[in-house]
Length: 125
Image (cartoon, rainbow, N blue to C red; front, top):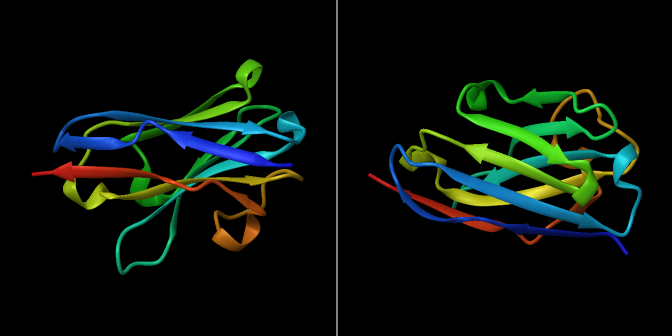
């Protein structure tokens, strides 16, 4: 049974940092693609970043480059999202997602089979 459990969300002031974690279980982590998405109220879920677990290759949505870093600890089957220089517009529910057969070319919600329940990030000005 695939499980993705996010943690690390919270409330911070603008300019602050947070590190989100996603612990994966129930499948072969090392052959998958892990991604972070986010969804603000009234908006569509958008891709943030993804990582190909077997070699650590990463990809970022254009608007996320520079402030966000996705990385992993393969020994722990855990993927992280380090977020620096947070802005109020980064406030959203952040979701971890897994695609079990490697990364698709883009970062689309429809490419991912499994999702966590999300962790809330709130950035105040």
